[in-house]
Image (cartoon, rainbow, N blue to C red):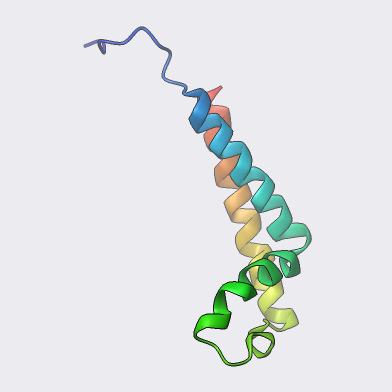
Length: 82
């Protein structure tokens, strides 16, 4: 059964969002400290010392590992859309 639309299923907005996620994933793998610094400002409302919540080197390594998995998923989704 064919859908009522004539499009091929790829949305330009969805591809743009995936590209944004791709950039965020690259930042998470290359420099996870940048993401922590950007999000540390959001903690100021309920955390007394946001600098004390900075992850250790093992925490950053885990962020990088999750970033690699995230990048793999985003790249796979981009390939499916194109």
